[in-house]
Structures are given as C-alpha cells and as structure tokens.
Length: 555
Image (cartoon, rainbow, N blue to C red; front, top):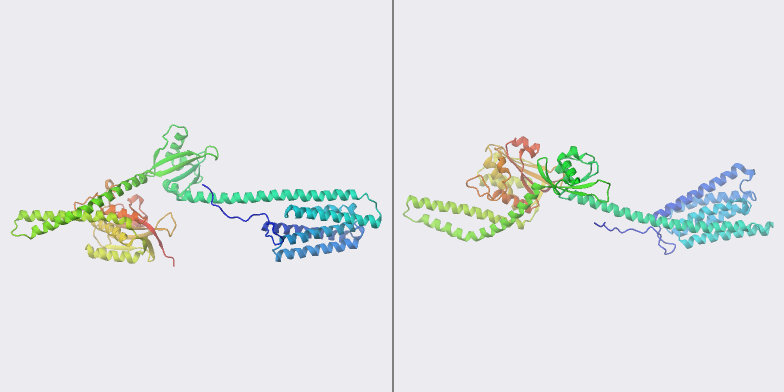
C-alpha cells in the first residue's frame, strides 16, 4: 500500500533574489552564527581589558584593536535585534554579516601586526558559516573578498613599513585555505541538507504508512496477532483482543493467553498441522490462518483469527436473503388466488341453510386462509428491507409511543412495561423498520413472560468496548423461562416456531430489517448478558439485543 502523498516545501532556498524564502533552519543557523560572533568579540575584548599592556592582541595598534572589538560586539547585538525583528531578505542578512566579519577581522589583523599575528585564521569561521547556508557562487564571493582584503592589508604593511615581500606566501596560503573551506563546507552543507530533506520526506511517508496500517488493523473484521520467535504477542488489533477476551495482549505469552492457539502455532511451524486449523477459544470456534513475517525479526509470524460461527452466519444470511427474495416473489403471486379463496369462503358462510359440517369446513377454510394471508404479509415485508431510509430517532418518545400502541393493539397492560434509558438517547434508523422490529420483539417477550406488572423491560445502554457515542444497545428483556438451549441457534431461521399458530417469520424479518439499517439483532444467553440485564432477567429470562448507530446527547 502506497503512502498518502503530502505536499512539502523544499528545504533549499529558492534562487530568486534577495527576497528569497529561506527555511526556518537557515534562520536558526544564522542566529547561532551571530551568537558565536558575539562570544568571540566578548572574549577578545576581555583579553584586551585583562592583559592590557601585555599586548597579547593589538600589538601594533592597541587602540584600534580595542575599538574594533567594541564595534564588533555592538554590531553583533545589532544583528541579533535585526534577526529577531526582520524575518525577510535572508540573503541581505547573510551578506551584511559575512562582509562585516571579513572587514572587522582584517582590522584586528592589521592592529595586531599583519599576517604574522596568526589572527588570519579567524576568517575561516565566518566563511564556513556563510558557505553552509548560501549558494556555491555566493560562498566563493565571500572567499574572494577575504582574499582581496588579506592582500590589501599585507600590501599596506609592505608599502608603509617596508617589511619585504616574504609575507605574501602565508597570505597566499591563507587565501587558498579560505577558498578550500568555502568550497568544502558548501558541498558538505548541500549534501547534508539534501539528506535531511530525504530523511524528512521518508519519515513523513513512514508516519503516513504507520497511520494507514493502524487504521487498517483497527477496522479489519479479522483478528490479527504478531508473534515473535519466543511466542510472545507483539501486536494485536481490537478484533483479536475481543476474540481472545483481553484488553491488552501486547507482551503476553501466547501459551498462557491461548494454549490451543499456541499448540496450533507450533504444529504449523513443524508443518505437522493443517494449513487452516480450527480451534475453540472461550466458547468460540475460530478459523486460524498463519503466515511467516518476511522482512521482520527472525521467527516472527502473523496469525489471522476469524470467528467461524460468524462466517457460517454470514453464509447463512446470504442463502436466506436469496430465499427471502424468492419467497417474496412467490408470496406476491399467491395473494390474488388467496384473496379469491377467502372471498369464496365468506360467500359460502353466508349461504343458508347450513349444517354443522358445512359451517365447520367453512370456518376451517377462513382460518387457514387468514393464516396464509399473515404469512404472505410477513414475507412481503422482506421487500421493504431494501428501501430503508434511516433518520435520527429520539428513543424516549418513540418507545413511549410504541408502548401505547402495543398496549392498545395487543391488549397488554401498560404496567407490564418498564423503560430504562437516557432522555437524550438518539439512534439512526428507519422509523417504520424500528417500529416493526420492536413490535415483534415485544410481542414475543410478552408471550413468554409471566404476564405481571413489570414483566417487560426495555433498556438502552452504550455499547461496551467502542466509542462512547458511536453505538447504542436496546435490550428487550422478559422474566419468562427463556429460550431452550436446543432452540437458541434456530431462533432467526425463517419458518422456525414453537407456537402452533405462529408463522416463524417474525424474528427472521426483524433481523433482516435491522441489517438493512446497519444494525445487529442477537439473542444473548445468560453467560453473555450484561450485569444490568442479568439482574432483571435472572439466569432463565430472555434478552434480545438490538445494536445500532446512535449516541446520547451531551448537555
């Protein structure tokens, strides 16, 4: 996966005149160069004031040397002020400071007896500093200026004091050193800047790649583990933490965390186990896929975990969706002849005289026609799942209205309901679909409850383990005997029912409508229920959990 491209400003200064835009690193370098200038001037001035007549510096003209040091120190202060206040025209700042360094050092050199004083070496420092933050031609100009100044200063000594021409040799050597320092420093600085720019770009690409990898791992539907050669977990994404039942798996030994998975890992490394083994961890059947990590540390490997039950459920959902579309089309074709049968049965029932056998047969036709009509109506609900229009729904008024409708339509006492939810809970759901889903859940819960005051409880809770304002869980719980273990795996299959008069499509349609709204509907056995629900239902009551997009408004 390629990294996200990011536009970056080149580190090198644009060559478009004195107003060129220089990077911040150049300004910082100029600040430190000026700081070294200030320290040098202070040290030389302190030496003059300390040794005085000893004439360590300024042997030929002490007063000129002293005045030059004072001027040098004051100029360094002025440069510091200018750097702080004026952050434009970098080339002008550099040129003024470099020329000042050359002129001042030549004056110090002249006041100390010329090239023989050894102060000419001080010229190398400003030349190196200027060459590190300037273009090649500019650095050569400063070197040429220093050479010219050295020649002029030495010529003055020759003409004024008649010292001979022997000092031109060290002057020439010093001039050659100035050019060499300027060229070498400039080339090294360019290479360093280019490498720094490359490192910066690579580090940006690396940060982007790491962030992409983090997001991909976080949102992967499969669990991912990175295991080192010693069997220690180095990395685990949230799905792997959920499947293995841990908050943070990094640094834990796999043999202690999941012995069955560690055994599968060892068998795979010895090539004695299946390529894609299935193991049981925490009551879940997991499909395991293992890969050797190439390019990493020796012995590192990747382990991918997938919930086999979820995979089977998804495959079942695909089959059921196809079956649903087929049955919906068939049901649509059945409606017309079914209506004719119902109408004919009504006409037969209105004829007279009628004996008991005719009345019984007519009643049987009517009842079964009505039952078929209910099945057809519920099957046709499958076509509506593709026309979901989710919208923000305030849960409290919606549930209150639902309770009133169910209590009136199904003759359920309003005292049987208990609502427990935040006042500002909001969900994103198709309003008609949500009404249909909850109506089915409430009717089922009432049918199997103890039918007392408070037998039905509707609870809204934030989903654990995720963002606090991303999803909400709506639990429909009852105080009845619960669902038999043999039936729990078939609850959401179409046409499965334990009621002689039921159609077996209610829960199946409810789950399909939930899926159309990016929600999930599950039956939670007692072992997986949250404490808030378990206290209400006990170990035997039923708990259906509708997990959907939603949040609680923050005041």
